[in-house]
Image (tube, rainbow, N blue to C red; front, side):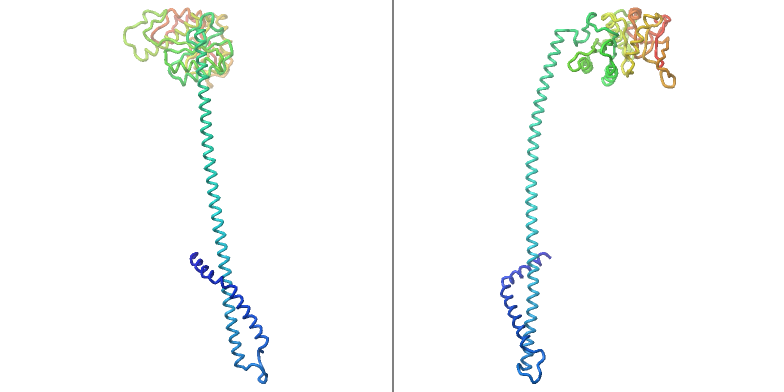
Amino acid sequence: GYGHGLDKMTRASSIVGNTRCLITQLVSCLVLMTALHIYIPRACPKNSKGLSESAAQDLQTELKAYRARFESEAEMLKKINYYQRTEENLNAAMGEKDALIQELRDSLKDLEIRFNDTREDEKDDNKDDQAKSSDNSEEDKKAEQEVEEDQMKNQTFLLPNRLTRESAPVGIPVGIITDSNLKEQKKTIESLIKGIPATGFPVFISQYGTENEMSKMIQSYLMKDKSRQNIYHLQFSNTTTATTPGASSSASSTKPATASVLSAARRSNHLYRILSTLFDSYGYAQAIVLDDYLDTAFDFFDYFQATSKLFEKDPSIMCVSAWNENGQAEFAKDSGTLHRTDVFPDYAWMIDADFWREVKTDWPQHGDWKAWIRTRDKSKGRSCVIPEV
C-alpha cells in the first residue's frame, strides 16, 4: 500500500546520497571492460603469446561479475528514479490538496462576509419599511382626522342618514338591503358599482343595526382616492319592538315572536325605512330596491333608465323589475322583449312615489311584506313589467 511504498522510498533515499560514488564506480568498470575487450582476444591461438588460458578465464569471470554488478546497480538506479518521481507526484498532489483546502476556506470566508452583509441590508430595509409604515400610518391618521373634521363641518358628507332633501343627489336612487353576511354583501355592491354611471343613480347602502364590521365595509365604498363617490350610507336601529310609522295597529302582538316572524319583521321594517327615507325624506320620484345576494347585469342601469318613463305613460303599471324567474335559456330568447306580470316580483324592482303613498299607510310591521303587497286590494288590477331575459 501507500505506507509500504513510503518505506521503500525511505530506504531508497538512503542510497541517493551515494549515487555519485556509485556512478563513478560504474564508469570505472566500463572503462576496465572496454580495455579488457580490446586487449584480450576472444580466442587465442595455442601458439600465441600473451595471457595464459587460466588467466584469461579469470579475467572473463571477473568481467562477468562486474557486468552483473553493473546491471544490478543500473536496476537500482531505475528504482531510485521511479521512487523519486513518485515522491514528487505525491508532494505535488499534497500541494494541490493544500491549495484546494485554502481556496475552500477563502470561499467560505467570502460567503460568510456576504451573508453578514445581506443580513445587515435586510435589517436596514426593515428599518426603512418600518419608517415608511410609520409615515403611512401617520398619513392615514391625518387623513382620518381630516375626514372627521369634514364630517363635523358638513354633516351630509359621510355620516349615515345626514342628507337632506336639498342636498340629496339627483337621479333615481338605488337602495341596497344588507344583512350580516359581509362576503355576499361585498359581491352585490362590487357587481353594482362596477358599471354604475358617474351621475344619475346615487347608491344608498342600508344597514339595519349597528354592527361595526358592516359599518366599516359600507364606509369603505364612500370614498375613492380621497374623492367623494356617489354612494351613501343609511343606518337604522335593529329592533322588532319599534313602531313603524303608519303601520296598522292590528299588526301589533304581545305574543313572543318566532325566529321566522322576527326575521320577516326585521326585513319588512328595514324596507319600510329605506323607502320612507328615499321618498318622504329625500323627495325622489322613483326608487330602485336591490335585494342582497345579487349580481347585476351590464345593462342594469340602462334598463331602469329606459323603463322609468313608463310610470307617467301607463298608469296600469305599478312597478318595474329586472328579475324574471322564468328568464332562463330554455324559456327565454329575446333580450329586447318586456312582459307584464300580476305578481309583484322579487330582488331588483322599482316603484314610483305615487305607489309608495298608497301602500305606506298600512305597511305590515310584522309578517311577510311580499305576500301582503301581492294581494288584489294592493295591486288594484295593475301589473309589473319584467324582462324576458
